[in-house]
Amino acid sequence: MEKREERYRGKAKTVYGTDDPKFVIMHYRDDVSAFDGAKLAKLEQKGETNNRFNAYVMGRLAGAGIRTHFVRMLNDRESLVKAMRMLPVECVVRNVVAGSMAKRYGLEEGMRLPEPLFEFFLKSDALHDPLVNDDHIRILGWATADEIAQMKALTHRVNAVLRPMFSDAGIDLVDYKLEFGHPLDDPYGPIVLGDEFTPDGCRLWDAQSAEKMDKDRFRRDLGNVIGKYREVATRIGVPLD
Image (cartoon, rainbow, N blue to C red):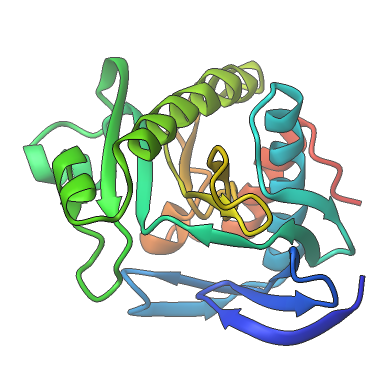
């Protein structure tokens, strides 16, 4: 597979085209950001850590029958994925109250929810990713009713796979976000999981101490960000070498 032109440069990843239009290459950089890009830094080993972490998680999800865009790792910092038309919403599942949910409703961070709680957010840095509901998404044409139902079902299926995986490693999967879309080679078929699953896009707490082991370490200036990313990876079985 031949790597070609840069297609998109996000906050922490760069997407490159290939000689096959059905596939692109995701390059994981050492960049880290928070607060819609207001806080920026570079953290050594972040790109390679997240690339390996994501490859492992996508493999676990594929093994459970969940369709993803991931094809294979190419090297320490790059993975081959299917080219996608992404839906412009983020799917969030919360198992424990934290972050914006605690602030929005005046709840105590760390309160365990009686069942997983699903939320939709519009993907827009300029608008700070506002909370939206099914009607916003359907009526404004961001996704169809069928796509909405698929996103909800798949997000809960991911939770059913990953929550016990982290729990077995002594880690609470507090919350996470996912993004979905259609592969360009199957534009009318079922949606598939895109983007990534890494500690950048979820909250992970040590089950005994409640120590934060995710990007909140960067947001809240707790230090040792990548050290904790790599500890999580090791505990769940990600091969880092």
